[in-house]
Image (cartoon, rainbow, N blue to C red):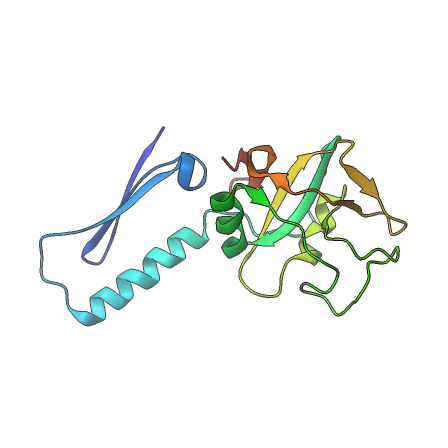
Length: 172
């Protein structure tokens, strides 16, 4: 593991650079100097900018790999997925203006695509988008739209996240 040390005003950020929080140990330690209020605000903004750079911004240039399905979410949701241990399922009205799924179903689901380059279009409107992937399995069904869905929660241990350098890293 690579140790990363960066200074943001009067604060020092340390991390061992593995993926996310379980694989990435991070801490912020205040230096032993006086902090001016304006420096603290600038420090927090710099730190947030640094964290925002960890994940690659998804776009239509992302290449699919055979056997994988892709899912878009936000950085905020990613933390929930990691901490809960699951990518959860939701009803058709969650985050959309529909009462039933395109196939007429109403059960809770998560939606996936085998086209990595188009996954980003389904990212939530709030937050910065990130792309997850998992291996296709018999748990996924194909809808008439060509999309895949699961009616079972996906364990976070089966998920990978796309990092800024283009590599896929296990979420946990």
